[in-house]
Length: 68
Image (cartoon, rainbow, N blue to C red; front, side, top):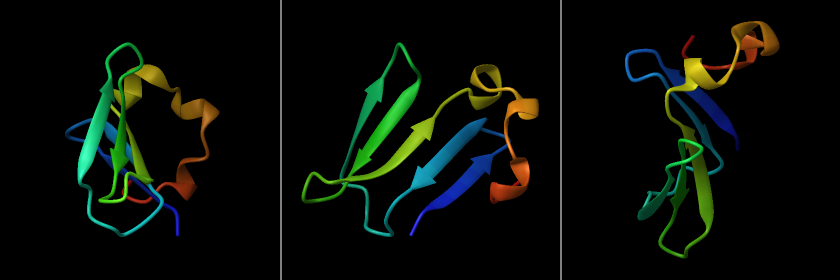
């Protein structure tokens, strides 16, 4: 399962690899990326903050993104 969502108000793109509950997150300040982990320390998601500033709409196939 891979689910991609975009929160327009928060300007946050989230890519989830699992429906498992997030137990811990690690914020990478330089890149604006948040890594989400489950209770077994397995990577279950990636969040990209300030997404519109980091990616160009022209470079992406937005029809594949849920929530736009």
